Image (cartoon, rainbow, N blue to C red; front, side, top):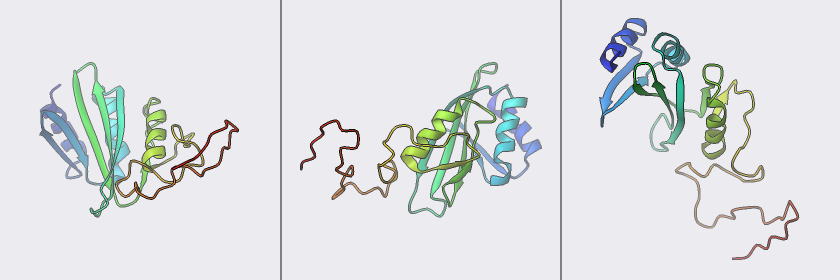
Length: 165
């Protein structure tokens, strides 16, 4: 199956709710209607053999109306075809994909930790890279870099850490 054939199937199933395009030799499916987001991904998994969830990436656009965007990189081994499925929203709440791809679990946790994306329905949404006491989400574009106290200056684990400027 080619990307053009996939687009025909998607347009038949989700008419007017998607924007499918190729840019920089990459295939994109931008979901315009958030209510069909999981249905599109389920269709891709079940009907188009996209069995491999490669990555979940979040982007923060503070000046746009839809400030948060999640891009799912999925691959069809049978068709040797990769697509990037995107959804943009005003808030940071997106549905989890762990019920479709178990491999999305840690990737969504990483985006929760670094970008503050809340994946609704996730079975274990908690920090995975940063300590629990870390404040903020360092990959957001509005994260303060100057005059920031990186940690809370407490040696919480009793490691003998010294905090200095």
